Length: 253
Ligand SMILES: [Fe+2]
Image (cartoon, rainbow, N blue to C red):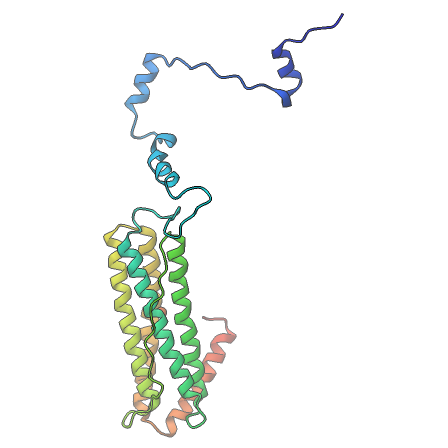
C-alpha cells in the first residue's frame, strides 16, 4: 500500500523543500503592549528609525542610472558649506606644494647648488600634496564632491639682495605654514558649526601637525638669520642634508 505523506511530514524529512508558511499575526497581550509603549524612546527601533534614511537612499537615482551628483554615503552634517571649505583647503595644500616644488627646483640650479635645501623643499612639496590627498580621501569618504581649482604660478627665483636666497625662501615657507594654520582653524570652525565630530577630529589632527611644521620653519629662519648669506649657508645646507638622512635612518617622519 502506498503511503500518502502529508505536507508537514515532507517539511520535516526534506528541509530543502520546506515550504515557508505565513506566520499568523501574534496577538500582543494588552499589558505587554502598554509596557512596551512606556519605554519607547529608550529602545532602539531599527526598522522605524531607519525608515527616513532608507527612503532617501531609495530615492537617490534610478537603478542602473547612477548620477555623479548622487551620494549614498553623505550624511546631513556634510553640508555644502563643508564640502566647499574642504575643496578650498585642498587648493591651499596644492598651491603650497607648488611653491615648495618651485623652491626645490631653484635650489637645485647649477649656479645655486644647495642640495640639502633642494631636497628639503622637494620633500615638503610631496608632504603638502599628501595633505591634499588626505582631504580628497575625506571628501570622497563623506560623500562630498572634490573640485580641483586653478594653481597660482609660483616665483621661480628666490634670490634676495639683502637676505640671500636661503633665508628668503625659509621666511616665505614660514609665512605659508602660518597661513595654512589659520586656514585649518577656519576649517575647524566650519566642522564645529555643523557638529560633525569626525570632521572636527580630522582637522584637529591636521592642526597638530601644522603647529609642528610652523615650529620647524621658525627654527630654520632663526638659524639662517644668524648666518647671513655667505659661506655659513653652505655649511647649514650640508647640516640640513645630514639631519634629514639621520631622521630617515631612525624612521621619524
Ligand atoms: Fe599642509
